[in-house]
Length: 80
Image (cartoon, rainbow, N blue to C red; front, side):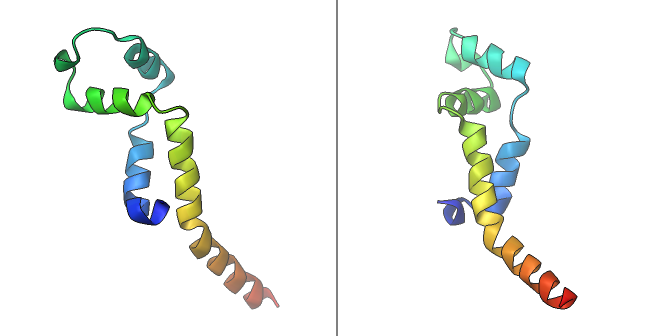
């Protein structure tokens, strides 16, 4: 539910997305979870969700869709 998370939170989550190298290292980590920092534990949990950051990107698109459509409609009306 994109309205529940809010655009700001979705944008923040996308900015937190790990690089490919970081993602690989987190996925391969099998040590003691308590040795990871809070951010790393959070990202490791997120990465357990298939295509998590692509899903977040899609939710952000849906959350912004109405305002983008409204803006485009107004722009087209101006052109007419």
